[in-house]
Image (cartoon, rainbow, N blue to C red; front, side):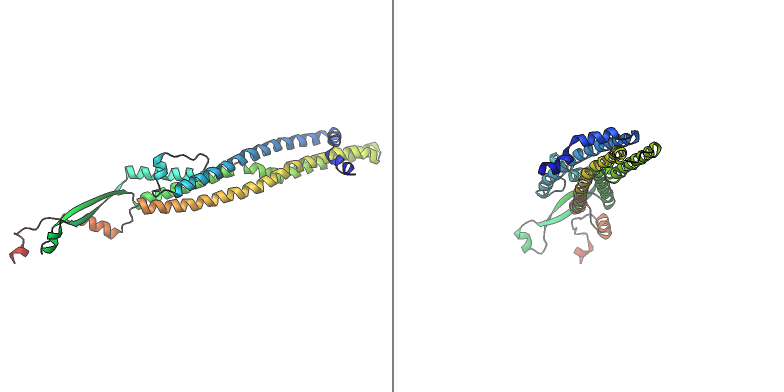
Length: 289
């Protein structure tokens, strides 16, 4: 009983018979669906490999990034994580920051005074040894350009992940309709032939209907795998894209804290207008009094 139930489904003779009885228009429709199926399966295989590599390399990159203190440490060490969209975004931002550090630096000089010794503390006149700390950062306007480069990189990586998905959506939406077109055309040809022959019998009608229905079967064979693959890949791409946006914000914040000059305008003016410290002289009026 099991063989009787399943043998018609797997029997290749029915499909071969239906294809032989299909009209020329039906066979052209089937050929178009086969070509669409080839493109669809090509996208499914290549996109599956790309997403798998992106997830695997992305986990390695995030693990390495979380272990660093400096947001540019990975780029300066020369480590690479091919296939990880987050790494491509990271490297783009690192290149932009390095460019501005080299070509548009903001040098911040911090002066600190250190007492020369305990004897100086006991005396009324305290002698200090100046210590200067020089750091190189980037301006807020340069950081705006870094943000733009990160947003552009995130958009580029998102488009790269979505590349080819239009073929799957076309196979899902268009495959059944293309097959239905071939079926309707074949049924129309069958009934037209019966009307011309004046032989309205099941024997005369069955071959033409079978040849027409194979177009719809082919359309469903194209659309069903593409539908499952499309839903899975859209979910994966959305997850990676959201992860990418979150990392872009985190990375920009880390760069801002480490390499951006966040001094206020008042502090910058005060430092620019601050006179050079000079040693007191007995000629000053304060010593004459």
